[in-house]
Image 1 (cartoon, helix red, strand yellow):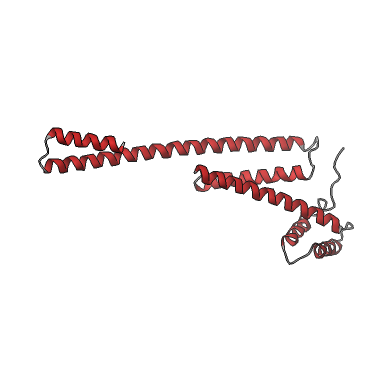
Image 2 (cartoon, rainbow, N blue to C red):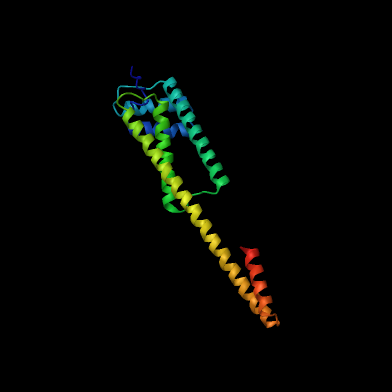
Length: 193
């Protein structure tokens, strides 16, 4: 059995956008929103009108979806902060935005009960793309962490070599024997490795 399409979903896109804008404005009540949208429908020659209860159901659903989106962002930010795996650069930002958009679209489809035989392939494709994107992002993040660790190791080794060279030169200048400077060098390299 197919879910009945709400009067809100049947609105022309431009009027639905105005409805969403009015609902986001805390100065405008749902009753005022309903009246303004019905006036727009009348002016544009549409026969259908929306009810206060349809506007309320839509507002509640959008608030629920918005809250879920906020929660998912908070969880993602918490993990990024905890693990230090924040993607860098514009590409990482783009991938994150794509994932948020796909997750939001999927949440809307699930909230609106649009899982029919016709829409199921699109939802499955969306989930597949989301999964693939997450996998690629995790792989890239893991590679970045490994690359950063390698760079840190190389930097530590270079700094240890430099410190050992300076200590060896200073030891020779102070009359330290070859064995003494070699021992000093070995101790520095071992301590900083």
